Image (cartoon, rainbow, N blue to C red; front, side, top):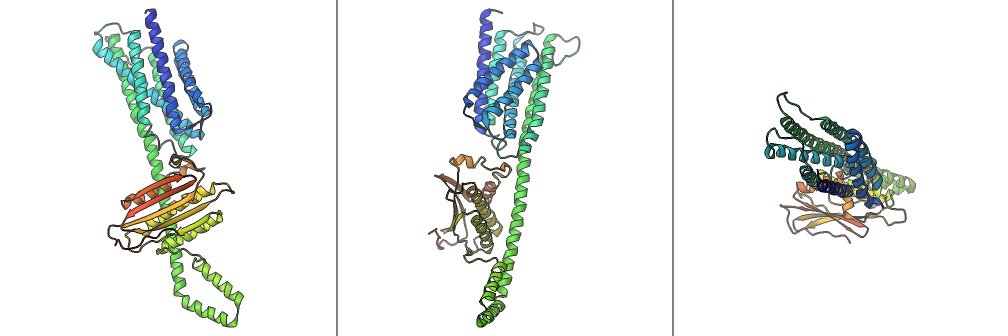
Length: 457
């Protein structure tokens, strides 16, 4: 090999390693928030790739790959913010994706090269130019894999508990180790050896073909596993959320029946109160009225929306907000015979107010905390709008996670979106200053357009 070819091979190798460092930086900062010295990360990844290649070639292939995996994981853990489990899975997914893309592209190149460009029985060793072409193809395949995985992995890498990240990462780490062992076997000779009469040309062709099949199988298995795990998790959380909503709805129905019983007995209560009034038993009268209020889930400023289930729900949420010292404003009007099920109203209002209360509760005690919710009918549309104070400064962060319990992230908003979709409605969110606004617009196909729209005073 000439010196010029060796220098060219070295230059291509360094450019590819620099590209891998840039890909790693771009991928990680998409899902993790970099620390102050985060821009050093791609440089250190470049050196780790270069050092790993040298150890693999001159000392031990397995030792070089093991060192690279550990160094890469350490760099991700050190240079980015986030939960340890999330950073672990991000590093493992990126490492495995780059490795699979490189192995697949490299094996595909040598299969084509051996099958079409070499004469049967010719020397099986490849030169620097062929190896450089393979390196360039591997880098291009790795860049394509990173680009294709950016959007699909967004729901996977956000909003999960620590245990889920660890469970998801372990099989992928085992898959990477398996690929390392196969690569080590290839450095010791050939991966597949046919019959004795077959020459080295056929053995190498079958070796790269076998590696191509194994890599493709690992790609399919990895995608099915990680996206299947994400889907199972979301279905489980959705089922749990649905069961909790059913329980809340049943509780509200019980409160409504309790209020109906109170109204039914109102005549008798009025007779009793008149007797206390005649006798001027003020303390007993006050005690009697308090018991009536508790029995009927009533308060001095009870919410009246036109929907008994929504009234009971608002009563509970208002008490919870007042318990957190949150200023409460509500002006809701829910028309009768609107075609929207009471349970769906419970889902919309309940999830919106739960998110608003949680957001306000995270503010400092000195900050102004408020929730304002209103609704009404305009023409043939029902509009439900809620505003609340928040500490967030980026609307994108609302779709990611700002919760201490990330396993519950996104489920409430997802339920709101699904309920709106059920009625062909739309959901809009807006962040202006430190005020978050969510608006739900639902069409009423069979509703008269003459009913007025009630706005917040």
